[in-house]
Length: 502
View 1: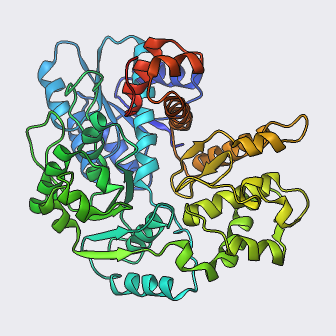
View 2 (view 1 turned 135 degrees about the vertical axis):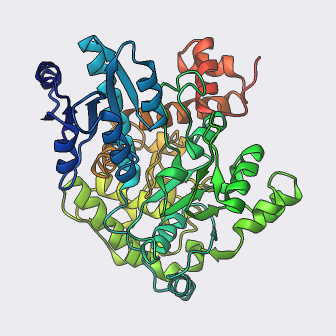
């Protein structure tokens, strides 16, 4: 993490902030003038900038304007005299994150800097595209067609609609399209529109102004601004709420949007790649998706084949995922016997490549020995137990993208065959996979990992409990051991549908 820069001509202010932040184990770098800071910006950047407004030479507002032009996502906190209202207003108009009024409480100042720091880290986690696009593996003719399409589109900025079943690798293709496009050096921003509660999705896409709603304590850039000059990947576009489809259509049509609570249009120079596993034509006929937006997105359609259409790729995918999983866990790579590979090649695998990756993660953690036989595979697979569409047939699945941990109850057959002293599917197994997912997210530079995984964990438990109680939330609360008010609040926060009162 980069240091926090403090710019103030008053040495005592610099000293107080340096000492307070040092107690929080936060590195700092101080400057006595705006000119010194601007010179430093030529070779380095901070995580957060704290600057006085009134200084000899370059003022804090001049510094703010220069910094925002070069680094629009950098949070800047300005220090101003308590009575200097004009300066405070000017600082917000210039894009300041927040201001500190002199004399300020040092604890409140540290808390504000910490909040700006979290915002900066959040921005960094989405603004920086991965240095290497994950491999798209495939020798099957159906995949060769996909590779050829990516090559034809390599120098184009045209909108692309990627279709295919869940788990076929739509985000990997979107990243490849970005990597080989003229925008490759700019941000690639991915957003799963189905994973964000609909009341938060508008702010997530377009950002919000300070005070736009309760809790909006500072202006925040949305995904469109974060993807400026780059690529915005909208996954599961078929699940986007109807009213937001109108706003998205307007952006695609005229290239401008408004932040939530904003009155000034923001220009968007963004290439949009959308993806869905749903039949958009049918959703248009059902009145669930705007026809005009469908035609805006459906400029070039790229269909990804299911794993059933490319079974010859399963052996190379298995070897790749076993190596990848072993590297992440720091263990020796396991190998599949010829019989086990033939068995996997014959499976339906409704979860496609994602399901196969999940299975390889399970094998790395749970299978005994270095050579994996058919008998070492999850019993739900070897006993040909029916699996729900998109499921993986065992306790934990970890997706290959930004990551979703899916927890599902073991089947009755698994419970029946569990070894003495071992929980069905192995408690160590799903905990190990959860640790693997957390390590993956942390290594990718993601922030708020606890919050992201915690929400997914709670959502999975509540959805499963509601399914068992046929949507009766009071019964579900009792089964989960939580209060009625708690489950009602969680259902609203997590955007869970299908719950009903008794």
